[in-house]
Image (cartoon, rainbow over the protein chains, first blue to last red):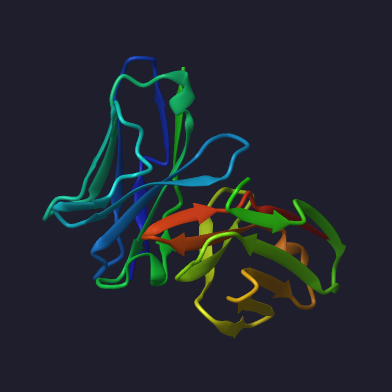
Length: 116
Length: 107
């Protein structure tokens, strides 16, 4: 039973390019959460998704960032026109249906974005 | 003031010592998570608590809802326990994280 899979593990982009980070939750999990960890800072919640539905995006920057979790395929965090300040580790977690944040969370290994 | 405060920020221990990491929060919560982030960066969920106490191997987590406080204990610490331990609280369908406690266990 594979855990939460994130890819790419490392991504380098130049300023102005787009970054797409993918997260495949554990089998049977329908809730996905994205978190960002800036260098030398703590984790911050970004967005909580169920399939085809954004439940809470209160932690998402208002511009350039978007997330989706389609009926088929992985969840995608998309950052348009990246800037140096977007350089961070982006973690995805998943949980079982119906549990939300109060269920056990399973984390991916993270995707480390570096913007040159 | 951060809603979630962890102490200490950094902790160095000798192998075999009993470790306590504390987490205090200022909001009413529905649950609290303890996470472990290894030097390589990966995150593992250790415990999810809404009341009382949980134990897994050498790890024990307790929570006192009235006092808005949780502790993570490690018995017979080992160098492989060296990691950053993060407390995260759930309130109003939101998740807020402590800054983490960096634990180093020396052989």
